[in-house]
Image (cartoon, rainbow, N blue to C red; front, side, top):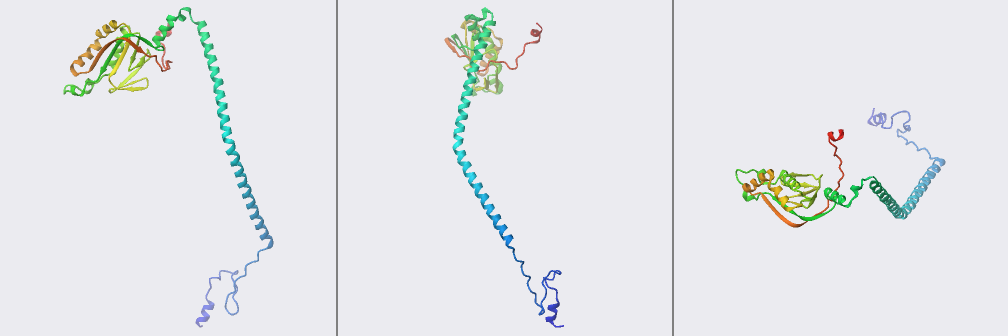
Amino acid sequence: MSQDDRSLDAPRRGDQGDDGPEPSAAGETTPAAAPPVSRGRRFRSSITVLLVLALSGLMFTASARLARNQDGRHPQNLTDLVQNEERRVESMTGQVVDLEAEVTALAQDLAPAELTSPEVVVNTGIVAGSVPVTGPGLSVTLDDAPPTQQSRSANVDDLVVHQQDLQDVINALWAGGAEAMTLQGQRVTPTTAFRCVGNVLNLHGRVFSPPYVVSAVGDTAALQASLDRSPAIGIYQEYVDAYGLGWKVEKSSSLDIPAFEGATDLRYARVPGEKDQA
């Protein structure tokens, strides 16, 4: 068999089955003719394209109209909302004022006569810290020791003012008959609590550094005498002499004690057990 005959008999890439192209008599393959596209199929394709274009146009038009309507409507709605809320707040504020007046009137009807006297009202306000007080008094200043006073025999705790030192001064002034008092210019009330962290004082949500000043309105002689007889303050003054802690007492003919501006409601206070039984 010649080389030309082997090439004709060899399997071809198109001979995959009975559906492949038929070889011609001369040994050449004839390409299969593509099936004709029907007219109905072309018509359906055209209709589909037209529908897609029409729907896209409708969507773009609707989006543009919606955007225009929203741009014109938002400011108007926001203004109406603010005005409505303002009117609602005014109405509720008026209701609160009316209710407070009603509560005050009912409290006055229920309160004993002696509690409504002007003197009792003023004294109650002074004790609670709700009214300012002006009068003669003392100012006590406590300060940390200067760095030059450090020595080998002293540690850091010996050279700073502690929370207990401030409490000792405040308690001594109360015991001496102080009518009103401030610490760092903040009104001290029966519910005032402060805390020292290192040489920093936390009081009424604010932070203060030394020197610390305690001012009290009252009889200056009685206040001074109470400071002098306090054992705790005597110990502090020993450290004043040994390490140079700051200590100064000043008399004043007129001290201005401001009113307390914080909240006075107690959230966690409770009556002691023996009072409950009584």
